[in-house]
Length: 486
Image 1: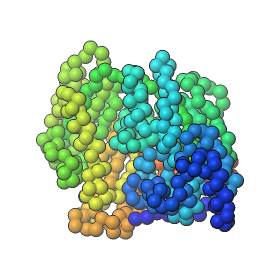
Image 2 (image 1 turned 180 degrees about the horizontal axis):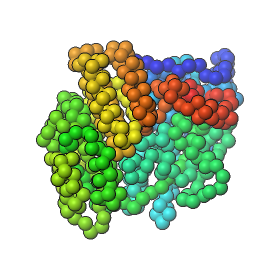
Image 3 (image 1 turned 60 degrees about the vertical axis):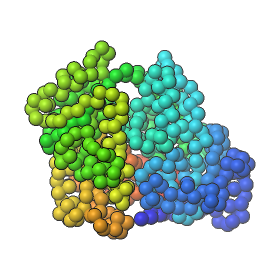
Image 4 (image 1 turned 120 degrees about the horizontal axis):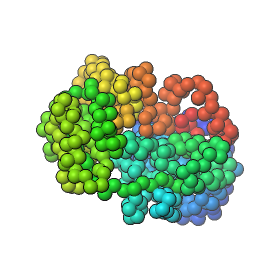
């Protein structure tokens, strides 16, 4: 399935002579080596990780410093060239893929990949936007600190992209979304000016918090080039537990009970329905599940262990009430780092399993926690009734109300045809159901191109007009990632 963006807001590049002049100016700005032209050089920048979005770039530019980004953007303003900022190429909503028009410049941040400073005393790290998330984590760890943002794509996603989409991940429960981890930003604005808000302050109550405009804006208001991130004390020990649930009804009370038991040190509360785990087994990505009852929903729990406390004692202290009440069973405590990694590998294998089974219609919804169990049960039943034979891969960061209710075509049915023909109706049903219950159609993946129309349909009209006003003010020519989000 291929999605194409609508035309940009303004006329762009009226003739090939303008193309040639603009490309010459861009080559001069970054060096000819870092201006990629021709399909053999640009192809890998022209599609998304899921294969849903395909386009054609006018060229790909790879600036190496903020000054070069600013000059590139100024050139694009002069020649009315739309700019598509691109990070690690792991987004799910098409925000970083050029359109099929062939008139957009892909601005790749991959060369801007340096950690610039790390302040152990202040607990901050300053880095460029192209730093791979795993490298940022490793840089913090070398100094005995933690950068807590964590997700399955951390080996390839870039921090700038994480901030541009306000990525969530596996530790939101304790540390928050990406925007909660940012103290300062440097941003190249659509007119080529550089906004320098690279502050390391925890407290700075001096007017509007401008950095928040660009966190989650998906490159539509400017290009994030550098950031100051919050770091945390690195826990020496943690408890990791895999357990079976009798049903979903008590998820909310179970979360509250666990948080109280571990003194709010719960970092992860991951949920996996039986069918999602069955997909992992069917795809051959897991020889054996950690727990015995493969027909029951299961959870992966993790929390930070206070200094001096024994892991087994701590686990039993926190989990005993839930075990005694029958809210958990088959509890398995990871007794080594290898076993912990094995638990997480099962959880993180679910998206790969869906791809191995032919692909899925993906959803990223969030709900008030009290509504989540009913939503999963009722919406799953309705989908099975409407589309007999479909397989449901349901999992997520249930501790923060985020669930991925993904629909895999019936076995033997052409996956591409199902996703193309039935996918829009499936998604409309799921998104409408989530919003009806006070939830969101995009918990952590963003809007991009894929969910742009959903934003128009479900956003508060006043909020939508404010977004459009901000966009017109900062980007009056409509050249910064046009057709994404709005």
